[in-house]
Structures are given as C-alpha cells and as structure tokens.
Length: 152
Image (cartoon, helix red, strand yellow):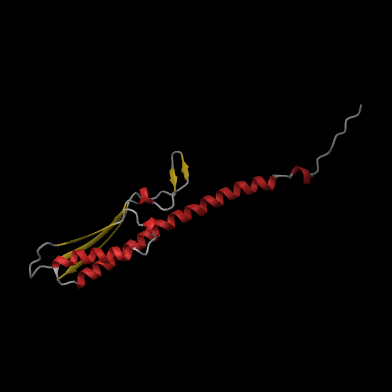
C-alpha cells in the first residue's frame, strides 16, 4: 500500500493566521480606545464642575444680602451642573461658605466647593484590571473643584 504525502504550500500554511493577528491587534486597540474614553469622561465632569464653581462664585459676588449669598451661590452652581447627564451627576454636592458676620473694614471670602465621589459613581467603568497594577485607567476616588472670591 502506498501512502500519499501531501506537500503543504505556503498558502495553506498561512491559513487562519489573519484571524489570530486580528484578535491580538484588536484587543490592544480596543484597550487603548476604552482607556481614552474612560479618561475623557472624568475630565468632562471636572471641567463642568470648574465652570459651575466659578459661576456660583460670580453669582454670589453680585448678591448684596449676606444671608442670601450662600443660597444663591449654591443654586447657581447646581444649575450649571445640570448640563451634565443625570447619571453623571450622582453624588455631586455644591457647598458655599462665606464669612458669617463680615466687618465693614475687612474683606470676606466666598468659597464654592463642588465634590463628587467619582470612583463609586463613574459613568464608564474601567474593564481592564491587571494584577499588581490595578484598573486601567486608574480613575480618581473623588473629583473636586473650588472657586474663591474675596468680597469687600
């Protein structure tokens, strides 16, 4: 009996390699793309928080009544935060502090502080968790923005 030996051509030897290469490259490209998206989301939230704290300080500076200044500043900051999607605003707190009884000669400091526990409420969760390194991208535990204004 005679056995046939078949010679494998180069074309047959390369069959299926493209699928393996695609799977390897796609995994790396997807990880970089998702990391970029996960880094951009907190930057958008933080930029909105900066804008809201500045707006709260600006509105608080225009109010003459010391009792209304805090309420109006917090309301203006909260209104500015509404530009974010509702799921991205979870846990955001705007707090205004102003000196209680300013004297006529001394200036008063108005501070608007906005915080969000971002790690617990991140709209986009990182999906890559490497042993010894942690999650990629590494997201901040808390986002914080502050604006201060010296009032006369």
